[in-house]
Length: 187
Image 1 (cartoon, rainbow, N blue to C red):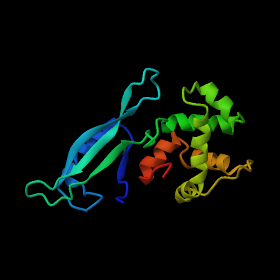
Image 2: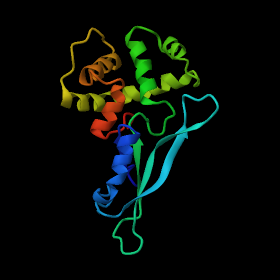
Image 3: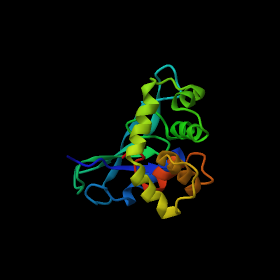
Image 4: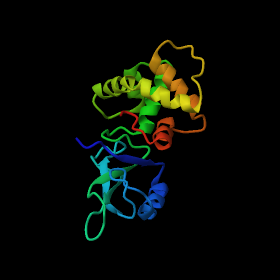
C-alpha cells in the first residue's frame, strides 16, 4: 500500500506561494526535483452550506514522469490547514466544539449550540477518533512547550488546554498544529 502523502499550508495565499515554487520542491514519494506540476483542485463538502455545495480544500500535485522527466508519476495533496482530510467538519468547527466541552457543556449541548447540521453521532465519532490520537498529539505539543497544569482529569480536556497553551494566539490551534508539524490531526 502506498502511504498517504500530503502537505499543509495555512491559507489560499500560502497555497498560491507554494504552487509557484513547485519546480524547486522535491517529490515526497521519490525525492525527485524539477518534476512537480499542478494537477487538479481538491473539492469537498462545505460544512457551512446547507445546500450540499462544495468548497476548495487544496490542490493535487503530480510528479511528472513524461518526456525526459525523471519523476515517479504519482501525486500528493496540498491541503489548506483548516481542512481535516477525509472529513467534512473543519478544524475550526471541531475546535469550537471542544472549547464548549472545556466550558462544561455536554457533547450534545455543544453540538446543538454550534448549530451542527450533521448526524447526532458525528461529534461522538470525532471525539472517539481524537481520543485515539491523544498520545501522538501530546508528543508533538510537548515539542513546543510542556503540558500546563490542569484541573481536569479527562485526558481529552487536558489536551485541549495543552493546545491552547501551545498556540495561545491562534484562532484555531488545530489549524496551526497541522501546518506546523505537517501531520494529520486524525492520522
